[in-house]
Length: 333
Ligand code: PMV
Image (cartoon, protein in one colour):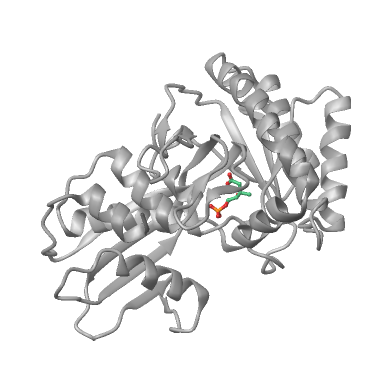
């Protein structure tokens, strides 16, 4: 099966005649148990499950309509993207999956409420918002599960951004990925906080897809990764269920550092960290030694995301004055 077959399977005989406009919002997300490695690169089927927290009102607002021009128009934060840009090409290729025989072109406008400098990938919230907007444009009425499968085809982690709160992406067993989708977890934790610590807004040296592939192919440590996830996953679920910040923070930090260890053992090595990342991580460890309950996680970039509870906020801001604090439940409380 390829992506087109999966889309056909999900949409079945739904109407392919577009309405006037679709508009939707999807939050960015940070993984607490990471997704690192695909078992099927063409369909973005992951090697393991992963768990994330969605970032409430930080995300992507997207509108889509049929364009009068004979090519797609893609706007990001008010600027039209050149057709040669990577993001334009990714959006266009994704839209190709949804064009009917009349082969219309689309105008897609996305504005992001994630601070540009926060160093968060825009692809997860972008593709989740896009698929929700397509669902509206065509009035398909897809379920969260179906939207999640379709979002996954744009970017793996986008399947988690379809939902708010804590989200569990189950990798599934099927070769076609029709059972690989995310679901919202039944955990409400209004005092949970994520702090975004920006260290560099520069473009990353290597994209996550290529870095994952290289890690799988060349890093001997990668064989340990599925084992790491299989121990971290039940501990994380237990920690979230009991709203136990120490367990959640410890597992998240250990999981993230283990993921980075697999990359460092790849060849050529993959190292997203900058000197400032190490310095900030040491500051987190020192803060913990001084009794603060704060943990860090890192993705395919040099920035840190801190994990803590609201009660520790003032002390943490004193240590990290530029921290951008996110309340993942701000839209839900
Ligand atoms: O969905 P992608 O291809 O952007 O990969 C995301 C990879 C990490 O951010 C490093 C981990 C994760 O689970 O989000």
